[in-house]
Length: 489
Figure 1 (cartoon, helix red, strand yellow):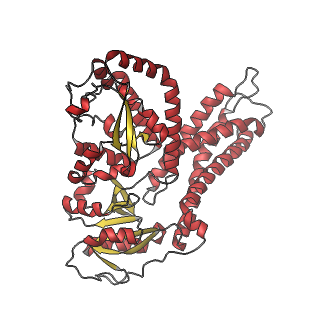
Figure 2 (cartoon, rainbow, N blue to C red):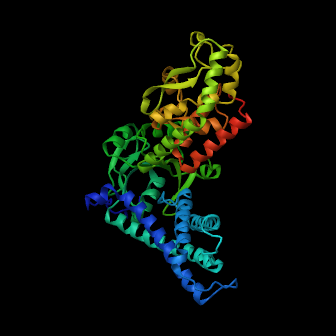
């Protein structure tokens, strides 16, 4: 082994506020940089329009104040476009060309939408407001340039802060021999990446106990759970290209804190297979096995969407819900609603509300629904096919037991069975159960494979975004309207 590794980097004590709120400060600085870039681009575009007018209809007596409403629109729309483009979910593995493309598309979309909205709302019959098309072109091009430049400056500042010890990622590397050395050297040679290597965990227990100078040997795989809990790790990097599927599952299952990111140094086949997202570590490719997205302010945003969405839908759908309740009462004996114990976030049990679609004694004859279930009422079959029976769960969403989108909740008895049989099954309970979910819109509902359904649920948990939730909701509505859900029964 080479003997060129330096001592592991130390985390700076620094300002307590900066240490606690580093990621919030970074996100806020990105937002401020984008707003300043767009405003500066707009002002300079106004000056260029006066001096270098493009061929268009003359617009005498131009004043910058006349363009402030359009400027506000462009700032708001561009920021929204950047948000949906995940430009405020800054990651060290982000590749520069990808960010440049997102800046171009976000600025273009923001400009087009702001012009469209301005045309509909700001133009008056008297023509008091009339934007200059030449100025819009200048502002669009300059905003792309300035956002790129200011974000570059912000990135340099962020890297400098990380070198100083702020906002660093506490990580351990699992592996041995050359792969582990390659990852470790890349981290030490690139302090701007912001890693603090707590130590290495030997994949092979027969390896020597102190293989890398200046880096702690933390033990073997069997100690990983204790290491994760004791050292409050942020990330685990697995540098074991030769590991079998069983070995990988064993390692990942020991990283049982939901906020831990897991990355894998791949072999050639894993890169070609492309089943996981690929990032990089100072040019070294890493697979993102688990990169939890739903944290911090994102939880608050998701909850706000749940409250507003469920409240609006309950009000808008109330006439239909009352009509369905009346039909259920007329169709068969029994109550209108059916409440059943289900397991949600962190294993918490709650009562999930549905429209009753089966006979009163249905649970005495079994709890698992099948395609030609004889327990269904005449109306119940229709309600289940159209997913109308699920709508009362909007009440669960409003109360906070569920979310609009998330893994579907199961009965506690089934959860106990599945957790013994399916690796990582309980990780789906790290998030709130959903009225609909990624598995459901991909046909994984009803009497389908629990293993496959769990894969979809875990993918959703690890890849959450506002846009993904919106897509799932839209696809759910489309399935309800078209009835294209063969497993809804």
